[in-house]
Every structure is written in structure tokens, then in C-alpha cells.
Image (cartoon, rainbow, N blue to C red; front, top):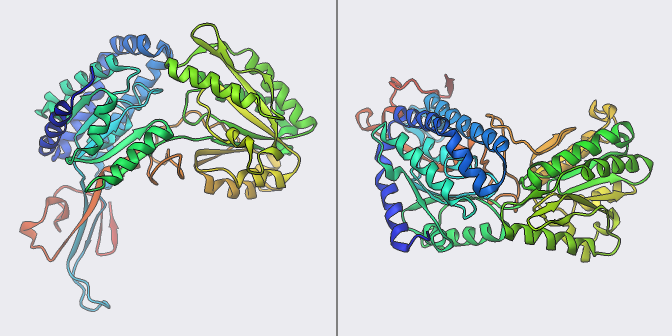
Length: 488
């Protein structure tokens, strides 16, 4: 099923040639809505195919498909609204210093986009997922590099999207699909690919990121690579509701067999009785968690080896031992370690790296200084969470200070919640400092469309030469900033 270099070239060229079919915003919005309708109509077949390849279960997959359809319709609404075009018009002003000429600015699509599917979300971060939906909404055709964990499903979804495109006279080349490692390399190097979106490992993402930068004409590469997603539990919070925090942590770290990119992988919890209660609750809840199947044997092997290596480090204990369980499943568990061992560089640095699967590391701290020292050693993350007492959440104590300390570390900061579950909403941000992502953009939420656009300004252009979006009479009824005033 490996695509040849010629097949990759054909897919990219077909996408490039399909750009004109997406010029009309009405067509784009209708296409996205029809794609959602067609996916829903094929739900039973798609979920069955996805479950056969991923073993994620019909309930989880049905929900994920619903999320995918919601994303498509949400971007259709954004296209209809038109605010994403960022239209700004300034008429000439000779009294300004320096004088202002006639300037008209908006955003245009970059061109064909390469999308690299994720393993853990066969619908929402795959062929019809957020990268594809946002790129199509921006007016960019897409060529998807299918993930090897669900190739059959990828083909089915691609056919559904092409069927939706045909209903609006959009050529099938608007959604290309290729398979194979070498095809992924060929795709990022293709001169007609204008940008790329990726969700996966640090190693794979960094290799593609470097390839995108090394091209004769470098292109934007929006990659989601890896994240530890730290959690800080204050002593007051642990004393107030340690049992609930332990249970909540267990649910979050084992959700989807720990295969979510926002799984909490490091928890700073207090030493002493308050922390002990939290740990007991966590132990009870994780011990009651059923063994699960990881997405493929490579991930299973990496998980088993990773938790074994971490568990052998000095001072590390395993109240509930994670690892292999049966021929194909893994059992959830967690490790504990004194936070002082993470506060300085050394052999315990491995505990500060993501371990994909149902495991987390609980670092027991003695004082706030240890918390600060550990946080100072962390790289960028998708999320950072703080669990506060009611008094701290009201602004007393160290709550506000902790929120400030966590903000530089992540793209989403949670207070008294859990990071698993990324809402598809206009205000959402799913990204963070490197290595969480390679750009400052989000891959979830309405502003994900911004990744596939670039601004252009027309200066002194006669009205007859301007695109309709930039004309004074605003024939398309777009929200815009006109001579300094916001019009909606």
C-alpha cells in the first residue's frame, strides 16, 4: 500500500489544481457541511472499520466521529461568517505622519496542505480531522498521509469526503491520500506543498519539521509533538479533597488507555498525610482499572520498556505497577519519587519525558521551593494544571502565584480540572511551547484556520481591480475594520 514518489506527486498536483474550486466561500461551507452529513450517514460502517483497526471500542469511536462532524460544521460556520479573513481597509490620509496611502488587507489561502494523521484519534486527528477541516475552510486543498494503524479506515473516510466534494462540483483531488513512511518524506519535500500539519512523536515530528525548514523554499510546519502535562496539587487542596483529586487523576491518566496527548504525566503532590490520602485514592482507583489494548505493538513495546526503565531508577516506587498484561494488553499504574530527585539534572531526567500509555509519575515535594525547582526544569507542554483549595481558588494563598508560574509552560492552564477532554470551541487553544508544538498556533478550535492563511495588502489599487472582499461597498457583507472602526 506504500505510495510511490510518482503517486505522491500526482496527489499533490491534483490538490494544487483543485485550488480554484475552493475560491467561493459558499462552496467551501456547503462542502464541509455535506462532508459531515456523509460521515454521519456512513457512521456504522466507519465505526466498525475503525474498531477493527484500533480496538478503541464503538462507544469511544462513535463519540469521536460525532466530534469530527461537529468540527466540520463549526468551520463551515466560520467560513460563512468571514471574520477569519481579517479585512482591514484604510483610506488615504495625507495629514498622518507619515502620510497613509490607500491600504487594503486581508488573508488568502497558502495552497496545498500536507496533513499527517495521528494514531490515537482515527477520526478527529486523521483524514477528516481538525487539520483537514481547517485547511479546507481556509481554501486549501489537502493531501493526507494516512497513519499505518488505520489505513483501511483512512481510505473509507477519504472516499466519503470526495463524494461530498463531488456534490458541489469540487474535484476529488481536493482531498488526496497517500500511505507509507517514504511517501510522508516525499510529501513534505514536494515543491507544491505550501504548509503541513502533524500530530505524533517528537522524533517523527522533528524530522519532518527539519525537512520543511531545509527545503529550497521553507514552509510552515505546525506540529504537535509531545507533552508531559504537569499537575501541581497544593497541600491545602490535598488536605481538603485529596480523595477526589486521586480519583480524578486516575480517571484522567487512564482514559483511552493513557493514549491522549494531554494525559497528565507528572504530578507534584505534597509529602505527608494530605498527600498520603491522595495517593491511597489514586492507588485504589488505578488498581480497579481494567487492562487495555494499545494502538499497536510498537507502542506497547515502548510502553512496557519505558515503565520498566523508569521503575528501576533509585528512589522510584510503584504502588501500582504499570506494564505488560497478557499477550496484547497493558495494565495501568503509577510511579512515585521524591521531588528533590527531579529538581536537579541527573539520571532521573527520564521521568520528565512523556511515556505514552496509562502511567503517571507522582513526585512528592516537601516545600514550595521544590515545586519551583521542578517546574523550572520542564519544557513546553500542551497543558498545565493546578489543584487548589477553595480558599486558594478565591485568591488567597499561593493560588494566583502558581497560575502565573504555570502559564509560561503551556498553551492551556487548568484550575481544579483535568486536561483530558479538549473542547472544540472558539476560545480553545491546543498547542504550547516546544516540544508541545512547533508553532504558536492551535490545532483545535476556530483559530486553527489561521495556520493556512497569509496576509496580503493592496496599496493604491483601483476599486475595479480589487477582490470583492476589499471593496468599499462590502458586497459580501464581511466583518471588517474600516478606517479604524470595527464594522460587524
